[in-house]
Image (cartoon, rainbow, N blue to C red; front, side):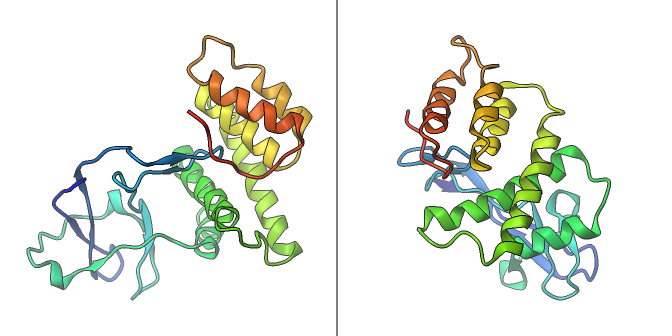
Length: 205
């Protein structure tokens, strides 16, 4: 892994100075891929696309922020990922989002809940928290239904499986044929559905 030059920018609200690491090169060696679409590659890390200013509390997409032209990294705070509550707060205060941005936020929420499973922790705080998770998955499913490609079919089937709608998941994933590049993934989801397993899992091969 070879780091790139940090991207430095200002908060659009209060002009606080931030930086985000970049990657010049990396690889997928020693990584894992999960059934919910999350990829964990130690040598190919991901960085935040959306964040919240720790001074003025403004949410903003980093691609919309202007390059600050700052030369000294010590002047900047490294940007951070949002937590579950912050993602929900952002969605509640921002309507009519572009499909790709809403999708990013909702899949990030899914991954954060599933991260608890990955760490062998309790997934939900209480029934209210579980209902928020269900609502998010249903809205994510509706969003992905507007996109017609193999990857989204896999994710829709996975969402249905995690909701324990196993028959619906199996029906959905029939759209993946044996010649598809996603067929090996589809077979693994089918096996989990047939065994009535709803937890996120590591993909093979």
